[in-house]
Image (cartoon, rainbow, N blue to C red; front, side):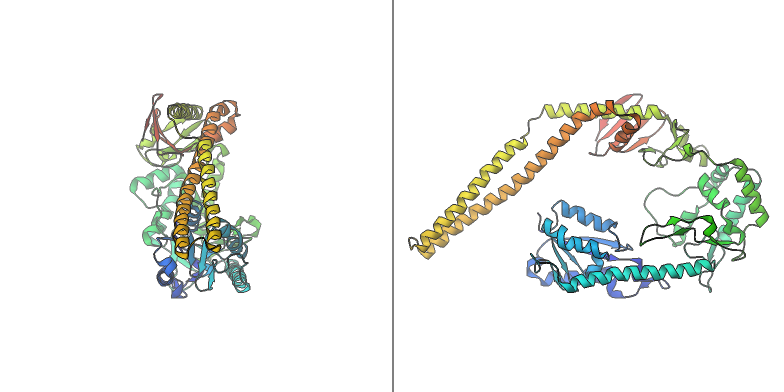
Length: 523
Protein backbone atom coordinates (compact mmCIF):
# COMPACT_ATOMS: atom_id res chain seq x y z
CA UNK A 1 0.00 0.00 0.00
CA UNK A 2 1.32 3.44 -0.94
CA UNK A 3 1.67 5.93 1.91
CA UNK A 4 -0.49 8.73 0.49
CA UNK A 5 -3.11 10.97 2.12
CA UNK A 6 -6.55 11.57 0.56
CA UNK A 7 -8.15 14.94 1.29
CA UNK A 8 -11.93 14.62 0.87
CA UNK A 9 -13.94 17.85 0.51
CA UNK A 10 -17.70 18.21 0.00
CA UNK A 11 -20.47 20.78 -0.03
CA UNK A 12 -24.07 20.14 -1.00
CA UNK A 13 -27.05 22.27 -2.01
CA UNK A 14 -28.27 22.03 1.59
CA UNK A 15 -25.25 24.15 2.59
CA UNK A 16 -26.42 26.99 0.31
CA UNK A 17 -28.77 29.89 1.01
CA UNK A 18 -31.21 29.41 -1.87
CA UNK A 19 -32.11 33.11 -1.98
CA UNK A 20 -28.57 34.40 -2.35
CA UNK A 21 -26.94 31.22 -3.73
CA UNK A 22 -24.19 31.80 -1.15
CA UNK A 23 -22.97 29.47 1.60
CA UNK A 24 -24.81 29.70 4.91
CA UNK A 25 -21.47 29.30 6.67
CA UNK A 26 -18.29 30.31 4.83
CA UNK A 27 -16.33 27.75 6.87
CA UNK A 28 -18.17 25.05 4.87
CA UNK A 29 -16.67 26.18 1.54
CA UNK A 30 -14.34 23.91 -0.38
CA UNK A 31 -11.44 26.34 0.03
CA UNK A 32 -12.01 26.64 3.79
CA UNK A 33 -12.14 22.84 4.21
CA UNK A 34 -8.96 22.51 2.13
CA UNK A 35 -7.10 25.14 4.20
CA UNK A 36 -8.13 23.52 7.51
CA UNK A 37 -6.98 20.06 6.38
CA UNK A 38 -3.67 21.34 4.94
CA UNK A 39 -2.92 23.18 8.20
CA UNK A 40 -3.61 20.01 10.18
CA UNK A 41 -1.37 17.89 7.92
CA UNK A 42 1.47 20.41 7.99
CA UNK A 43 1.38 20.40 11.81
CA UNK A 44 1.51 16.58 12.07
CA UNK A 45 5.05 15.24 11.68
CA UNK A 46 3.86 11.76 10.65
CA UNK A 47 1.69 13.13 7.83
CA UNK A 48 3.42 16.32 6.67
CA UNK A 49 5.85 14.63 4.27
CA UNK A 50 3.35 12.20 2.69
CA UNK A 51 2.07 12.84 -0.87
CA UNK A 52 -1.47 14.25 -1.01
CA UNK A 53 -4.40 13.49 -3.30
CA UNK A 54 -7.51 15.69 -3.34
CA UNK A 55 -11.04 14.46 -4.02
CA UNK A 56 -14.04 16.80 -3.91
CA UNK A 57 -17.79 16.80 -4.55
CA UNK A 58 -19.28 20.24 -5.14
CA UNK A 59 -23.08 20.23 -4.91
CA UNK A 60 -23.60 16.57 -3.93
CA UNK A 61 -25.64 15.34 -0.97
CA UNK A 62 -23.99 13.24 1.70
CA UNK A 63 -27.08 11.04 2.10
CA UNK A 64 -25.80 8.51 -0.43
CA UNK A 65 -22.47 7.33 -1.83
CA UNK A 66 -23.19 8.10 -5.50
CA UNK A 67 -20.74 11.00 -5.62
CA UNK A 68 -18.05 11.10 -8.31
CA UNK A 69 -15.24 12.38 -6.06
CA UNK A 70 -16.12 9.93 -3.29
CA UNK A 71 -16.23 6.97 -5.70
CA UNK A 72 -12.86 7.97 -7.23
CA UNK A 73 -11.35 8.04 -3.74
CA UNK A 74 -12.78 4.59 -2.87
CA UNK A 75 -11.45 3.19 -6.17
CA UNK A 76 -7.96 4.48 -5.34
CA UNK A 77 -8.21 2.97 -1.85
CA UNK A 78 -9.10 -0.43 -3.32
CA UNK A 79 -6.06 -0.19 -5.61
CA UNK A 80 -3.78 0.39 -2.61
CA UNK A 81 -2.94 3.97 -3.61
CA UNK A 82 -4.12 5.59 -0.34
CA UNK A 83 -3.24 4.90 3.30
CA UNK A 84 -5.00 7.79 5.08
CA UNK A 85 -8.28 9.68 4.55
CA UNK A 86 -8.82 13.06 6.21
CA UNK A 87 -12.00 15.20 6.33
CA UNK A 88 -13.07 18.41 8.07
CA UNK A 89 -15.80 16.49 9.92
CA UNK A 90 -17.69 13.24 9.41
CA UNK A 91 -20.71 15.04 7.91
CA UNK A 92 -18.47 15.86 4.92
CA UNK A 93 -17.69 12.13 4.54
CA UNK A 94 -21.40 11.26 4.63
CA UNK A 95 -24.69 11.90 6.39
CA UNK A 96 -26.03 8.34 6.41
CA UNK A 97 -25.49 6.99 9.93
CA UNK A 98 -25.33 3.33 8.84
CA UNK A 99 -23.03 3.88 5.85
CA UNK A 100 -20.55 6.06 7.75
CA UNK A 101 -20.49 3.62 10.67
CA UNK A 102 -19.87 0.72 8.27
CA UNK A 103 -16.82 2.48 6.83
CA UNK A 104 -15.44 3.41 10.26
CA UNK A 105 -16.07 0.04 11.93
CA UNK A 106 -15.55 -2.48 9.13
CA UNK A 107 -14.41 -1.38 5.66
CA UNK A 108 -11.51 0.93 6.51
CA UNK A 109 -10.11 -1.27 9.34
CA UNK A 110 -10.21 -4.29 7.00
CA UNK A 111 -8.36 -2.36 4.28
CA UNK A 112 -5.88 -0.89 6.78
CA UNK A 113 -6.98 2.69 6.09
CA UNK A 114 -6.52 5.40 8.68
CA UNK A 115 -9.29 8.03 8.77
CA UNK A 116 -9.10 11.39 10.53
CA UNK A 117 -12.01 13.76 11.21
CA UNK A 118 -10.53 17.03 12.46
CA UNK A 119 -13.52 18.78 14.06
CA UNK A 120 -14.83 15.53 15.55
CA UNK A 121 -11.44 14.82 17.13
CA UNK A 122 -11.49 11.34 15.64
CA UNK A 123 -8.39 9.40 14.52
CA UNK A 124 -8.84 5.70 13.76
CA UNK A 125 -5.21 5.05 14.80
CA UNK A 126 -6.13 6.16 18.31
CA UNK A 127 -9.22 3.90 18.28
CA UNK A 128 -7.42 0.94 16.67
CA UNK A 129 -8.81 -2.33 17.99
CA UNK A 130 -11.72 -0.52 19.67
CA UNK A 131 -15.21 0.55 18.63
CA UNK A 132 -15.71 4.24 17.89
CA UNK A 133 -16.54 6.48 20.81
CA UNK A 134 -20.13 7.20 21.81
CA UNK A 135 -19.62 10.88 21.00
CA UNK A 136 -18.62 10.10 17.38
CA UNK A 137 -21.51 7.65 16.96
CA UNK A 138 -23.91 10.25 18.38
CA UNK A 139 -22.63 12.91 15.96
CA UNK A 140 -23.18 10.54 13.02
CA UNK A 141 -26.72 9.90 14.21
CA UNK A 142 -27.35 13.66 14.49
CA UNK A 143 -25.99 14.25 10.95
CA UNK A 144 -28.31 11.53 9.65
CA UNK A 145 -31.32 12.94 11.53
CA UNK A 146 -30.51 16.46 10.29
CA UNK A 147 -30.70 15.32 6.65
CA UNK A 148 -34.00 13.47 7.18
CA UNK A 149 -35.52 16.38 9.12
CA UNK A 150 -34.39 18.89 6.46
CA UNK A 151 -35.83 16.67 3.72
CA UNK A 152 -39.21 16.49 5.48
CA UNK A 153 -39.35 20.28 5.92
CA UNK A 154 -38.40 20.96 2.28
CA UNK A 155 -40.99 18.42 1.09
CA UNK A 156 -43.70 20.04 3.22
CA UNK A 157 -42.81 23.52 1.92
CA UNK A 158 -42.72 22.32 -1.70
CA UNK A 159 -46.09 20.61 -1.23
CA UNK A 160 -47.64 23.86 0.04
CA UNK A 161 -46.36 25.78 -3.00
CA UNK A 162 -47.55 23.03 -5.33
CA UNK A 163 -51.09 23.16 -3.92
CA UNK A 164 -51.07 26.92 -4.52
CA UNK A 165 -49.99 26.12 -8.12
CA UNK A 166 -46.77 28.17 -7.85
CA UNK A 167 -43.76 27.01 -9.87
CA UNK A 168 -41.41 25.04 -7.63
CA UNK A 169 -38.57 23.86 -9.89
CA UNK A 170 -37.12 25.12 -13.16
CA UNK A 171 -38.82 27.84 -15.18
CA UNK A 172 -40.74 26.61 -18.22
CA UNK A 173 -39.11 27.56 -21.55
CA UNK A 174 -40.79 30.77 -22.76
CA UNK A 175 -40.97 32.30 -19.27
CA UNK A 176 -38.62 33.97 -16.77
CA UNK A 177 -38.81 34.54 -13.02
CA UNK A 178 -40.92 37.46 -11.83
CA UNK A 179 -38.47 40.13 -10.56
CA UNK A 180 -40.59 40.93 -7.47
CA UNK A 181 -42.80 37.92 -6.73
CA UNK A 182 -41.26 34.66 -5.60
CA UNK A 183 -42.57 31.46 -7.22
CA UNK A 184 -44.17 33.44 -10.04
CA UNK A 185 -43.13 33.56 -13.70
CA UNK A 186 -43.75 36.03 -16.50
CA UNK A 187 -43.44 35.79 -20.29
CA UNK A 188 -39.91 35.98 -21.71
CA UNK A 189 -40.18 37.89 -25.02
CA UNK A 190 -36.90 36.36 -26.20
CA UNK A 191 -38.16 32.77 -26.15
CA UNK A 192 -41.96 33.12 -26.11
CA UNK A 193 -41.86 33.98 -29.82
CA UNK A 194 -40.21 30.60 -30.50
CA UNK A 195 -42.99 28.81 -28.59
CA UNK A 196 -45.65 30.69 -30.60
CA UNK A 197 -43.85 29.85 -33.84
CA UNK A 198 -43.74 26.13 -32.95
CA UNK A 199 -47.50 26.06 -32.29
CA UNK A 200 -48.22 28.08 -35.44
CA UNK A 201 -46.15 25.74 -37.62
CA UNK A 202 -47.92 22.69 -36.19
CA UNK A 203 -51.32 24.29 -36.87
CA UNK A 204 -50.17 24.92 -40.46
CA UNK A 205 -49.54 21.19 -40.85
CA UNK A 206 -45.79 20.92 -40.25
CA UNK A 207 -44.69 17.74 -38.48
CA UNK A 208 -42.66 17.88 -35.28
CA UNK A 209 -39.59 16.66 -37.17
CA UNK A 210 -40.00 19.37 -39.84
CA UNK A 211 -40.29 22.00 -37.10
CA UNK A 212 -37.11 20.70 -35.42
CA UNK A 213 -35.27 20.73 -38.77
CA UNK A 214 -36.31 24.36 -39.38
CA UNK A 215 -35.17 25.53 -35.94
CA UNK A 216 -31.84 23.69 -36.22
CA UNK A 217 -31.30 25.20 -39.67
CA UNK A 218 -31.69 28.71 -38.25
CA UNK A 219 -29.45 27.97 -35.28
CA UNK A 220 -32.16 28.59 -32.68
CA UNK A 221 -30.99 27.57 -29.20
CA UNK A 222 -32.82 24.63 -27.64
CA UNK A 223 -34.40 25.13 -24.18
CA UNK A 224 -31.39 23.38 -22.59
CA UNK A 225 -28.85 25.40 -24.59
CA UNK A 226 -30.70 28.64 -23.80
CA UNK A 227 -30.60 27.94 -20.03
CA UNK A 228 -26.87 27.30 -20.28
CA UNK A 229 -26.31 30.52 -22.24
CA UNK A 230 -28.09 32.56 -19.57
CA UNK A 231 -26.19 30.86 -16.74
CA UNK A 232 -29.35 29.43 -15.12
CA UNK A 233 -27.95 25.94 -15.68
CA UNK A 234 -24.35 24.73 -15.54
CA UNK A 235 -22.78 23.82 -18.86
CA UNK A 236 -22.12 20.11 -19.23
CA UNK A 237 -19.46 18.32 -21.18
CA UNK A 238 -20.67 16.36 -24.15
CA UNK A 239 -22.75 16.92 -27.25
CA UNK A 240 -24.40 20.30 -27.94
CA UNK A 241 -28.21 20.09 -27.58
CA UNK A 242 -30.28 19.99 -30.78
CA UNK A 243 -33.96 20.32 -31.59
CA UNK A 244 -35.58 16.91 -32.06
CA UNK A 245 -39.07 15.48 -32.48
CA UNK A 246 -39.19 14.89 -28.71
CA UNK A 247 -38.13 18.45 -27.81
CA UNK A 248 -40.82 19.96 -30.04
CA UNK A 249 -43.44 17.47 -28.84
CA UNK A 250 -42.75 18.30 -25.18
CA UNK A 251 -43.46 21.99 -25.91
CA UNK A 252 -46.62 21.25 -27.91
CA UNK A 253 -47.93 19.04 -25.07
CA UNK A 254 -47.21 21.48 -22.21
CA UNK A 255 -50.45 22.93 -20.84
CA UNK A 256 -48.52 25.62 -18.93
CA UNK A 257 -48.38 27.70 -22.13
CA UNK A 258 -52.16 28.34 -21.77
CA UNK A 259 -51.64 30.03 -18.38
CA UNK A 260 -52.55 26.91 -16.40
CA UNK A 261 -50.02 25.76 -13.80
CA UNK A 262 -49.75 22.04 -13.11
CA UNK A 263 -47.75 20.58 -10.18
CA UNK A 264 -47.23 17.38 -8.19
CA UNK A 265 -46.40 15.27 -11.24
CA UNK A 266 -43.79 13.33 -9.24
CA UNK A 267 -43.28 12.63 -5.55
CA UNK A 268 -40.23 11.53 -3.56
CA UNK A 269 -40.86 8.70 -1.10
CA UNK A 270 -37.42 8.95 0.55
CA UNK A 271 -34.26 11.09 0.40
CA UNK A 272 -32.77 11.28 -3.11
CA UNK A 273 -34.92 8.48 -4.53
CA UNK A 274 -35.54 10.49 -7.71
CA UNK A 275 -39.30 10.46 -7.21
CA UNK A 276 -42.08 8.36 -8.69
CA UNK A 277 -44.74 9.34 -11.23
CA UNK A 278 -48.01 10.47 -9.62
CA UNK A 279 -51.40 9.56 -11.21
CA UNK A 280 -52.94 12.45 -13.17
CA UNK A 281 -55.92 12.46 -10.81
CA UNK A 282 -53.57 13.66 -8.04
CA UNK A 283 -51.98 16.52 -10.04
CA UNK A 284 -52.58 20.11 -8.90
CA UNK A 285 -54.06 22.44 -11.57
CA UNK A 286 -54.83 26.16 -11.43
CA UNK A 287 -56.02 28.15 -14.41
CA UNK A 288 -54.86 31.73 -15.03
CA UNK A 289 -51.87 31.20 -12.75
CA UNK A 290 -49.64 33.23 -15.10
CA UNK A 291 -49.84 34.99 -18.46
CA UNK A 292 -50.64 32.66 -21.35
CA UNK A 293 -48.42 32.42 -24.42
CA UNK A 294 -50.84 30.21 -26.40
CA UNK A 295 -54.63 30.59 -26.55
CA UNK A 296 -56.57 27.68 -25.09
CA UNK A 297 -58.40 26.94 -28.36
CA UNK A 298 -55.12 26.79 -30.31
CA UNK A 299 -53.65 24.46 -27.67
CA UNK A 300 -56.73 22.20 -27.90
CA UNK A 301 -56.47 22.09 -31.70
CA UNK A 302 -52.83 21.02 -31.50
CA UNK A 303 -53.67 18.28 -28.96
CA UNK A 304 -56.38 16.98 -31.30
CA UNK A 305 -53.84 16.88 -34.16
CA UNK A 306 -51.34 15.03 -31.99
CA UNK A 307 -53.97 12.51 -30.86
CA UNK A 308 -55.02 11.83 -34.47
CA UNK A 309 -51.40 11.15 -35.32
CA UNK A 310 -51.40 8.41 -32.65
CA UNK A 311 -48.69 7.21 -30.34
CA UNK A 312 -45.44 5.96 -31.74
CA UNK A 313 -44.76 2.25 -31.51
CA UNK A 314 -42.60 1.18 -28.62
CA UNK A 315 -40.25 -0.39 -31.15
CA UNK A 316 -39.19 3.10 -32.20
CA UNK A 317 -37.84 3.94 -28.76
CA UNK A 318 -34.07 4.06 -28.45
CA UNK A 319 -32.43 0.93 -27.07
CA UNK A 320 -30.31 2.30 -24.16
CA UNK A 321 -28.20 -0.85 -23.86
CA UNK A 322 -26.57 -1.00 -27.28
CA UNK A 323 -23.11 0.60 -27.87
CA UNK A 324 -23.71 2.04 -31.38
CA UNK A 325 -23.04 5.77 -31.94
CA UNK A 326 -23.06 8.11 -34.94
CA UNK A 327 -19.57 9.22 -36.01
CA UNK A 328 -20.87 12.57 -37.32
CA UNK A 329 -22.99 13.98 -34.47
CA UNK A 330 -21.98 11.62 -31.66
CA UNK A 331 -25.54 10.69 -30.67
CA UNK A 332 -26.65 7.16 -29.94
CA UNK A 333 -28.26 5.34 -32.85
CA UNK A 334 -31.95 4.57 -32.79
CA UNK A 335 -33.39 1.11 -33.38
CA UNK A 336 -36.23 1.37 -35.90
CA UNK A 337 -38.88 -1.34 -36.24
CA UNK A 338 -36.52 -3.73 -34.39
CA UNK A 339 -34.62 -4.16 -37.66
CA UNK A 340 -32.45 -1.14 -38.51
CA UNK A 341 -30.06 1.16 -36.66
CA UNK A 342 -30.06 4.76 -37.89
CA UNK A 343 -29.12 8.21 -36.59
CA UNK A 344 -32.15 10.27 -35.66
CA UNK A 345 -30.23 13.53 -36.17
CA UNK A 346 -30.65 13.19 -39.93
CA UNK A 347 -34.34 14.01 -39.49
CA UNK A 348 -33.58 17.25 -37.62
CA UNK A 349 -31.07 18.72 -40.09
CA UNK A 350 -31.00 19.52 -43.81
CA UNK A 351 -28.35 17.61 -45.85
CA UNK A 352 -26.99 15.86 -42.76
CA UNK A 353 -24.08 13.36 -43.15
CA UNK A 354 -25.94 11.35 -40.49
CA UNK A 355 -28.23 10.09 -43.27
CA UNK A 356 -25.40 7.74 -44.33
CA UNK A 357 -25.55 5.96 -40.98
CA UNK A 358 -27.96 3.11 -41.62
CA UNK A 359 -27.28 -0.55 -40.77
CA UNK A 360 -29.44 -3.61 -40.54
CA UNK A 361 -29.36 -4.74 -36.87
CA UNK A 362 -28.46 -8.34 -37.72
CA UNK A 363 -25.53 -7.23 -39.92
CA UNK A 364 -24.16 -4.79 -37.34
CA UNK A 365 -24.33 -7.37 -34.55
CA UNK A 366 -22.70 -9.97 -36.86
CA UNK A 367 -19.83 -7.57 -37.65
CA UNK A 368 -19.29 -6.99 -33.91
CA UNK A 369 -19.42 -10.75 -33.24
CA UNK A 370 -16.83 -11.46 -35.92
CA UNK A 371 -14.53 -8.71 -34.63
CA UNK A 372 -14.67 -10.17 -31.10
CA UNK A 373 -13.82 -13.65 -32.41
CA UNK A 374 -10.85 -12.26 -34.37
CA UNK A 375 -9.61 -10.35 -31.32
CA UNK A 376 -9.85 -13.41 -29.07
CA UNK A 377 -7.97 -15.55 -31.61
CA UNK A 378 -5.23 -12.92 -31.99
CA UNK A 379 -4.89 -12.59 -28.20
CA UNK A 380 -4.65 -16.36 -27.72
CA UNK A 381 -1.98 -16.63 -30.45
CA UNK A 382 0.08 -13.79 -28.95
CA UNK A 383 -0.05 -15.37 -25.50
CA UNK A 384 1.03 -18.77 -26.84
CA UNK A 385 4.15 -17.15 -28.36
CA UNK A 386 5.28 -15.49 -25.13
CA UNK A 387 6.80 -17.14 -22.09
CA UNK A 388 5.76 -15.59 -18.78
CA UNK A 389 6.17 -16.93 -15.23
CA UNK A 390 3.15 -18.79 -13.91
CA UNK A 391 1.35 -18.15 -10.65
CA UNK A 392 2.65 -21.50 -9.35
CA UNK A 393 6.28 -20.48 -9.98
CA UNK A 394 5.63 -17.20 -8.21
CA UNK A 395 3.96 -19.01 -5.31
CA UNK A 396 7.03 -21.24 -4.93
CA UNK A 397 9.24 -18.15 -4.63
CA UNK A 398 6.85 -16.74 -2.02
CA UNK A 399 7.06 -19.91 0.05
CA UNK A 400 10.88 -19.78 -0.12
CA UNK A 401 10.84 -16.13 1.06
CA UNK A 402 8.56 -16.96 3.98
CA UNK A 403 10.95 -19.71 5.07
CA UNK A 404 13.85 -17.21 4.98
CA UNK A 405 11.83 -14.72 7.06
CA UNK A 406 10.97 -17.45 9.59
CA UNK A 407 14.66 -18.42 9.80
CA UNK A 408 15.65 -14.81 10.57
CA UNK A 409 12.96 -14.66 13.28
CA UNK A 410 14.43 -17.78 14.88
CA UNK A 411 17.94 -16.33 14.62
CA UNK A 412 16.78 -13.18 16.42
CA UNK A 413 15.30 -15.26 19.23
CA UNK A 414 18.54 -17.25 19.57
CA UNK A 415 20.55 -14.02 19.48
CA UNK A 416 18.50 -12.59 22.33
CA UNK A 417 18.95 -15.76 24.37
CA UNK A 418 22.76 -15.51 23.94
CA UNK A 419 22.58 -11.89 25.08
CA UNK A 420 20.51 -12.86 28.14
CA UNK A 421 23.05 -15.64 28.94
CA UNK A 422 25.83 -13.01 28.72
CA UNK A 423 27.41 -14.79 25.75
CA UNK A 424 27.20 -11.47 23.81
CA UNK A 425 27.96 -7.95 24.86
CA UNK A 426 25.32 -5.23 24.48
CA UNK A 427 27.18 -3.70 21.52
CA UNK A 428 27.50 -7.07 19.75
CA UNK A 429 23.81 -7.82 20.31
CA UNK A 430 22.68 -4.45 18.92
CA UNK A 431 24.93 -4.75 15.86
CA UNK A 432 23.83 -8.31 14.95
CA UNK A 433 20.17 -7.60 15.76
CA UNK A 434 20.22 -4.52 13.50
CA UNK A 435 21.72 -6.59 10.67
CA UNK A 436 19.01 -9.26 11.00
CA UNK A 437 16.29 -6.59 11.16
CA UNK A 438 17.51 -4.99 7.92
CA UNK A 439 17.61 -8.39 6.20
CA UNK A 440 14.05 -9.10 7.40
CA UNK A 441 12.84 -5.72 6.04
CA UNK A 442 14.41 -6.41 2.64
CA UNK A 443 12.74 -9.82 2.52
CA UNK A 444 9.39 -8.31 3.54
CA UNK A 445 9.64 -5.80 0.67
CA UNK A 446 10.41 -8.62 -1.78
CA UNK A 447 7.48 -10.57 -0.35
CA UNK A 448 5.11 -7.64 -0.92
CA UNK A 449 6.29 -7.32 -4.54
CA UNK A 450 5.95 -11.06 -5.14
CA UNK A 451 2.49 -11.11 -3.53
CA UNK A 452 1.31 -8.41 -5.94
CA UNK A 453 2.96 -10.19 -8.87
CA UNK A 454 1.29 -13.46 -7.84
CA UNK A 455 -2.13 -11.80 -7.73
CA UNK A 456 -1.56 -10.17 -11.15
CA UNK A 457 -0.55 -13.54 -12.63
CA UNK A 458 -3.63 -15.17 -11.14
CA UNK A 459 -5.83 -12.44 -12.65
CA UNK A 460 -4.13 -12.80 -16.04
CA UNK A 461 -4.51 -16.58 -16.01
CA UNK A 462 -8.18 -16.29 -15.07
CA UNK A 463 -8.66 -13.80 -17.89
CA UNK A 464 -6.99 -16.14 -20.38
CA UNK A 465 -9.24 -19.02 -19.31
CA UNK A 466 -12.26 -16.73 -19.65
CA UNK A 467 -11.21 -15.55 -23.11
CA UNK A 468 -10.62 -19.12 -24.30
CA UNK A 469 -14.15 -20.04 -23.29
CA UNK A 470 -15.79 -16.90 -24.66
CA UNK A 471 -15.76 -18.00 -28.29
CA UNK A 472 -17.41 -21.32 -27.43
CA UNK A 473 -19.83 -19.45 -25.17
CA UNK A 474 -20.86 -17.05 -27.96
CA UNK A 475 -21.74 -19.99 -30.19
CA UNK A 476 -23.99 -21.59 -27.55
CA UNK A 477 -25.86 -18.59 -26.13
CA UNK A 478 -29.47 -17.74 -27.10
CA UNK A 479 -29.88 -14.60 -29.23
CA UNK A 480 -30.86 -12.19 -26.46
CA UNK A 481 -28.03 -13.33 -24.14
CA UNK A 482 -25.53 -13.28 -27.02
CA UNK A 483 -26.50 -9.68 -27.76
CA UNK A 484 -25.90 -8.68 -24.13
CA UNK A 485 -22.46 -10.37 -24.08
CA UNK A 486 -21.46 -8.65 -27.33
CA UNK A 487 -22.46 -5.21 -26.07
CA UNK A 488 -20.62 -5.65 -22.76
CA UNK A 489 -17.33 -6.44 -24.55
CA UNK A 490 -17.01 -2.93 -26.04
CA UNK A 491 -17.20 0.64 -24.74
CA UNK A 492 -18.67 1.94 -28.01
CA UNK A 493 -19.00 1.24 -31.71
CA UNK A 494 -18.74 4.36 -33.89
CA UNK A 495 -20.62 4.05 -37.20
CA UNK A 496 -19.52 6.27 -40.13
CA UNK A 497 -21.68 5.06 -43.01
CA UNK A 498 -23.26 1.91 -44.43
CA UNK A 499 -19.87 0.14 -44.64
CA UNK A 500 -17.47 1.70 -42.10
CA UNK A 501 -17.32 1.49 -38.31
CA UNK A 502 -14.85 1.60 -35.41
CA UNK A 503 -14.94 -0.68 -32.37
CA UNK A 504 -13.53 0.75 -29.12
CA UNK A 505 -12.71 -2.12 -26.74
CA UNK A 506 -13.39 -1.94 -23.01
CA UNK A 507 -10.27 -3.76 -21.83
CA UNK A 508 -7.67 -1.78 -23.83
CA UNK A 509 -6.99 1.35 -25.86
CA UNK A 510 -7.17 -0.68 -29.04
CA UNK A 511 -9.56 0.33 -31.83
CA UNK A 512 -10.70 -2.05 -34.55
CA UNK A 513 -11.65 -0.43 -37.85
CA UNK A 514 -14.01 -2.32 -40.15
CA UNK A 515 -14.50 -1.33 -43.77
CA UNK A 516 -16.16 -3.53 -46.39
CA UNK A 517 -15.77 -6.59 -44.14
CA UNK A 518 -11.99 -6.01 -43.76
CA UNK A 519 -10.84 -5.42 -40.17
CA UNK A 520 -7.59 -3.78 -39.05
CA UNK A 521 -6.49 -3.07 -35.48
CA UNK A 522 -4.90 0.25 -34.62
CA UNK A 523 -3.75 1.66 -31.30
